[in-house]
Length: 244
Image (cartoon, rainbow, N blue to C red; front, side, top):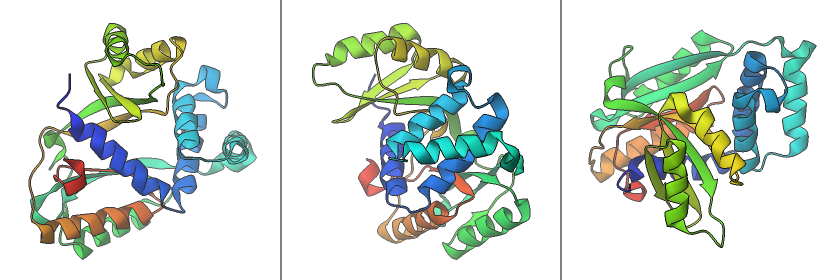
């Protein structure tokens, strides 16, 4: 079941990067607004909102901020509409890149994304130019417990319908078919597992090795995307040193 660290480690790296950014709450606030608009303000009846709340708490977003974002999105102030847009392109060295954004101004976001690609030795591409190199996967992250038997946890997630399982020192990473994400997450919660995040990610079918010069440009590109409020997620197929 191991061997899929490409998604586990990319997720870990993204988490470390996001936690260091002052705008992480702004990004999560937009996700909360979109989730409320799609399914209402009650997380018990809105699985997507429940997932974003778990993500917010994992990022140490205060409950006051979470509740305020939900209240704002469900009230008169929730009239700002965020469009979900996916951009595809190539980073330095031909690295495949997918950028997911939530924006209230498509022209602004498109210009910013193009600028970042150009600034870092890459180029914005056309729709589907790199998406065939990735596969949509539901990824659930749950923390380890001191008394866990990892084999038993693995059997549990397989019985719930997961198709892959990996772990780090402190967390389990469970990969599922996107259509079963809600069912597997609910099963884990009923089994007493805390959910740190549950979301659909774009997982590269394979990664490419790059030299140090290209890696420096890719890292700069990722940092610039991370600093942009409109950009929610960035996926790539570069084999970075700390993602091996």
